[in-house]
Amino acid sequence: MPMPNPPVTNGPDMSIFAYLCNNPSVMKTSFRIYNVLRPLGWLYGLVSYIRNRIYDKGIIKSTAFPVPVIGIGNITVGGTGKTPHTEYLVTMVKDTFRTAVLSRGYGRCTKGYILADGSATSRIIGDEPMQIRNRFPDIDVAVCEDRVHGINSLLESRRPQVIILDDAYQHRRVTPSLNILLVNYNRFLLDDAMLPAGRLREGAGNRSRAHMIIVTKCPCDLTQDAMDVITSRLAVSQKQQVFFTTLEYCDIYPLDGKTQIPAADCPVLAVTGIADPAPLEAQLRKSHSEVQMLSFPDHHAFSKRDIRKIENRLGSMPGGTVIITTAKDAARLQDAQISEDLKKKIFILPVKPSFIDGSQAFDSAVLSHIESFHK
Image 1 (tube, one colour):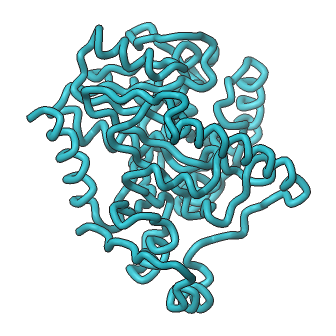
Image 2 (cartoon, one colour):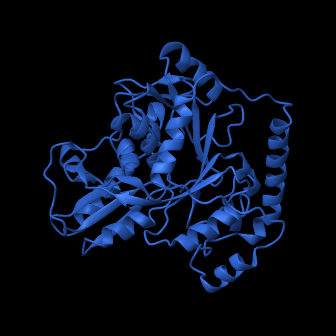
C-alpha cells in the first residue's frame, strides 16, 4: 500500500506540530552537532549550493542514458544502510533483467574503470562493491569514479538492462532515471547541519531531486501516525513517495564457509569498521551474555597490527568466544593476512531491509519504471 501523498502547505501544520510535541520520540535528534563549526558549515553549504545551481541551470550538463539507471544514496555522510538497500534492489530485479551495479569504489587502491572478476578484492574495487560481488556473483559489479564513463563502459561491454548506481546522489554528472534517497531515522536530515558541524553533504532541500525517499533504520513498531508526520516533514512534492524500512538481522554464517555455527549464547567479540556499529551491538546483546566491541573507522583497511590486536583481545576473553562482524567488514578481513585458525572463529551477521509498510508499492513502482524502458 503506497504511503499517502504529503500535503502541500505554505506554513507549519499545527496538527503535526502538536503531534511532535506530544510524541518527542517520533524522530531522534540527540545526535551531536558541533556549533562552533557552523561557520565552516555555512561556507561548505554555499559551495554545494552553487555547484547544484550550476547543474540545475544546465551550465554543466548532466547525462541521461537509454537504459534505466537507478541511483541510490544519501545526503548525509554514511550510516543510512546504502549497501543493504542496494542488495534489496539487486535481489528484486536480477532474475528478470540483466543487472549491473556501478560504484565509485570508496577506499580502493586503484583508479579508473574496473569490472570485477574472480580476482577482485576489496583493495581493488572497495569493500562495499566486494560485498555485493560476493553475494551476487551472477551480476556485473563495476567501479569507476567517473560514473558517466563507467556507465558507457558497461553498456559497451556488458549490455545491462538496468544499472544500479550505489552512493551516487551527489554525482550530478549523471541524471538517474529513478533517484532514491535514503534518510536515517536516527539522524534526521532536517535537524542536521552541514559538514563539518554536522553530517550533511549538501542542503536538506536537495531532497527534492529524489523520486522516492526511504527512511531507514526505523523502529519496528513505528506507528502509522508517526510515518504520516515524517512523510509530511520530508516530502517536498506530491509526486514523491516516502517509505519506511527497518534493518532485519539474518542468521550468521562462517567466513570460511564450512565452520560449524557456534552456540547461540557464546561470548562474542564484535569487530567492526562501519559508520554506526551501535545497532549491531544492540542486536548481539539480545542473545549473547558477553559482548565486547572492537571498533575501527568506517572502511578501515585491516593491517597486520590490527589483526594482532584482534587476536590479543580474543585471547583475553573466555574460551569458546567467536568473532562476529558485518559483511562489509568481512570483505576487508578476507584481504588481511589472517591465519586459518583465526578465520575459523569469524562469523558474519548479515542484514537486510524490511519495509514496515508499502513494500509491494515500492517493488511495483521500481519494476514498472524498468519495464517502461523495455516496451
